[in-house]
Image (cartoon, rainbow, N blue to C red; front, side, top):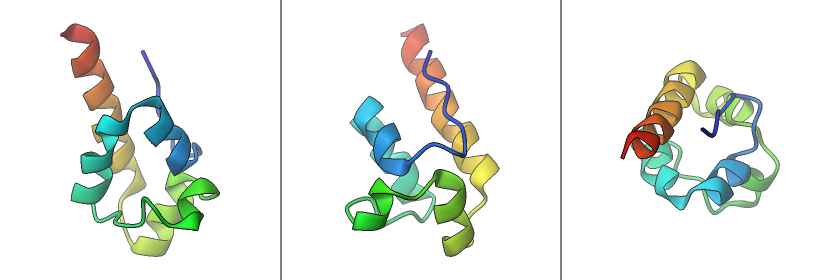
Length: 70
């Protein structure tokens, strides 16, 4: 299973699975295509946007866990 952590770069997570994009978007991360997504960690981007990084990482990991079960 892919284990997502808050120190991972946003674009790295998207490269692992593009299906994670809606999770980022639903959590208010609308900057997936901006240059910062290639250099910012999930934690840093969440801090800038006032988003709960733990919640986002949990949802991302739940997504991967469900894919593994399928």
